[in-house]
Length: 375
Image 1 (cartoon, helix red, strand yellow):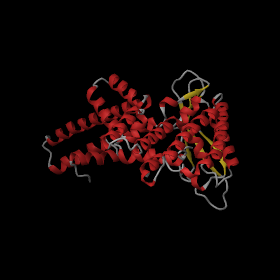
Image 2: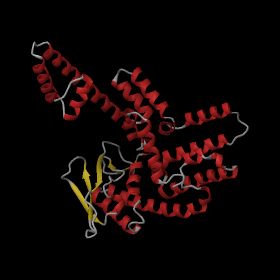
Image 3: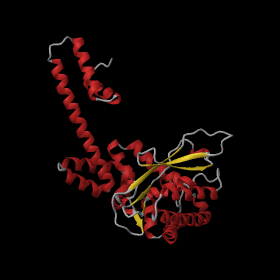
Image 4: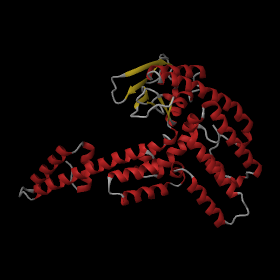
């Protein structure tokens, strides 16, 4: 898959978010990785509220005398409505949650997005533990059981195209073993001192171009954009960094100016990973500049996409609700403190108020904020 393996790409993206970014930006990232510009229905259909299936692997322990295990597809949050698919459970799946998701639009068509590919890759990642043919059958069965028509037929057709792409990719990658293309682009950029010649860079550019065309030949433009668009933007950014670093005609200051230029030209999703502080700063500016919920939503949507804007709006509401609840508690607590009760009785009344107004987890948080001694 080009300079990134599936695992390397996911780990790189997730590490960048969960170890660098604050919670408000992490929430936005959860939506950004769906690659808003790459969501498509097959065939094109009127978009609408999508239904979503959350999938998880059974946490039943593996045992030598049980070859049959189950993984469950849970429709929404209704755990009683499940589809059980039998099969040998690879050890690497045990206790994990299936990556990706399936989404359909109001017309019943499959919405093709990055997370569709993630779902495919999750099943296929167990190759080596289980024969690939069996994994494909499992995935076909899963799609059949969990998608209504016409999304079911679209999903099966898409899987066939994706398998064909992966076969062609495997054959092609053997030609580029000398370029260490299993490393990710950031590692290549960080290790320039080990020596990438101009010829290497040109080969990498040719490699990217070939992958770009191969993906679109096998998957079509819309699906390739949905599956690989963000990755391709990031790969190209790293390649441009290599070219700038190797340009001896540029001074240090000029190189930095070029780095800034190519970063500014990248979509927000790439800048979110490469320079998260920029996105954080922009989000902060939006929060300060826009008082209206509508205006704030629009600005966030333009920066991060609709899904991220929706999540941030939901977070705003939760924060406002929390502030309101905390304010009410403080008012009632102040009334208790003015009631003339003895100190022990006040403490008991405040603790009772705390128990009535907040959950166990919330009580600990409020107690820390208000300096309350819990019993």
